[in-house]
Image (cartoon, rainbow, N blue to C red; front, side, top):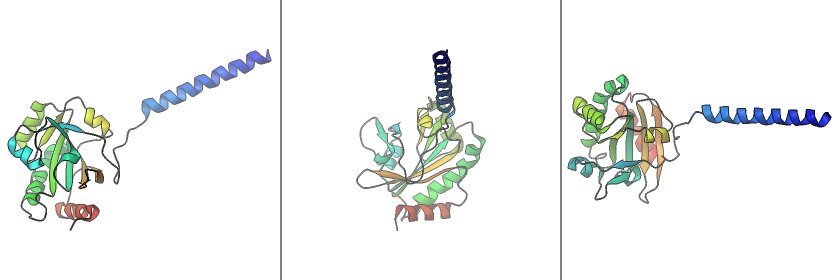
Length: 195
């Protein structure tokens, strides 16, 4: 009788352990990569638009990863065509792009790209054309990139320092709008150790 009671207790504890583990893994929240960490491998298609391919410093191939972009710092916006905050942020990001392009200290060193979470090529092209986005945008129609980076809300920004040896580290990882471009650029220059 005592053995039967011990067996019931053991089975009950095993069931409770299984339920606890299942519940934890089913509801565990994935987090975006943190500052000073590294991005997961994100494979993007090489742009078909020649100017964008040249802007990113890519040559050959059909795909690339963010550390292959020829820049010291790559600013990545995770957006969605359907996100009203992303739509509102678009003109501001266009200004940031032109601020970088028109500054001889930053041009070529800072690059900007966008990844459309859950957006098809058609939706990304619509967003690009509707908001006159001058920098490369890429679709993530199956949410695979979005999942890798912690299923962040949009807009979400990463700034990545690309080192000469091909390694990288995240300088900035933050949700929401970029409020002050000058302070943002100054902060990135400082964190990247650039003058």
